[in-house]
Amino acid sequence: MAAHDDSGAEPGTGPTARRMILGAQLRRLRERADIARADAGYHIRASESKISRLELGRVGFKDRDVRDLLTLYGVSDPGERAVFLDMVKESNQPGWWQKFNDYMPRWFDDFVGLEEAASRIQTYELQFVPGLLQTEDYARAVITHGLPETASAAAEGRVALRMRRQRLLFRPNSPRLWVVLDESVLHRPIGGRRVHRAQLDHLLEMITLPHVTIQVVPYERSGYAAEGAFTMLRFAEPELPNIGYIEHIAGGIYLDRPDEIELVGRSLDRLAVDAETPDRSRQMLLKVRAEA
Image 1: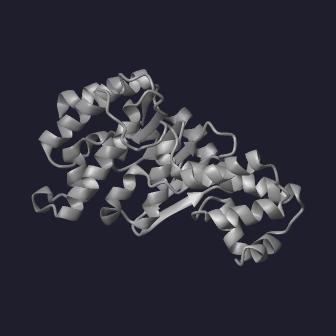
Image 2: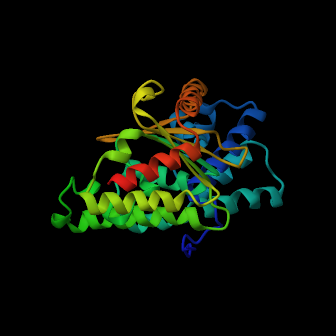
Image 3: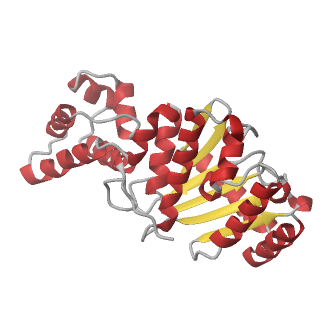
C-alpha cells in the first residue's frame, strides 16, 4: 500500500518544520549574544513581535533579514552563515499542500505542515474518525454535512487534501499514529450503512500496520479525560517542541506553552488508562462491524 511522496522534501521534513528549526536556532544565537528581541527587530527594520514570530517559525524568512541578524549575533564564519542561508531557502520552499490552498483555510496550513514533519501523532476524537484514517466516502459525508451528492468543487478539493494527507502513513519513516476514539464514534453511521461499514473495515485494516494504534474508550469511561477532541504532535528534532492542536468551527488553536503541553499530556495519560487495550479495542471494532 505504498504511496509516492511528491512533497519535494525528505520524508519527515518540510518547510514548516524547517522554519521552526531555523527560528529556534536564531533565538539561541540572539540569547547567546545577549541581545533583546526589540533590539534585534530594530536592526532589521521590524518590530519585537516580528522577531518573536520569526523565532517561533510562524512567518517566513527573508534572506536579507537573516544575513543582518547573523551579523548582529556575531556569526561571521562563511560556512556557518551558508548553513543558515540554505535553511532559509529550504524553509521557503512550497509544501505539497500549497496546491490545495484554494480549498484550505489559512489557519490549517501550518497544521498540515507540522503533521507532515511529526514523528508521533496522538489524537483523541469523540465524534468522527480522525482525518488520517477516514475513507474517501466517509470524508465526503463529513465535509458535505451529510449531503455528498451536492459536493461542490471546493468540497471535493477538501476531500482530495484529506486523502493526500494520509500518504504520510505509508512512507518509509512514517510517524507513529496513536488514536483514541470514544466508543460512540464506532456506532455513528456517518454517510449511511454502506459508508459506515466500509469505514469500520478500513480501521480494521489500518491497525494491522505496526505504527498505527487505535484504542477505544467505552461508554462507561468516556467524557472524563478531556472535554473535546485534540491532537498532540511530537517531533524527532530536539529543536521542535511538542505542539497541541484543537480545532473549532472557525479555526484552530495551537498549544505550545509548557503549562498547556503539560495539561494535554495529562489528558493523554488519563486516556491511556480509560481506553481499552489495542487488542480489546480491535475486538470491539469487530463486534460493531459484525452488527453494522
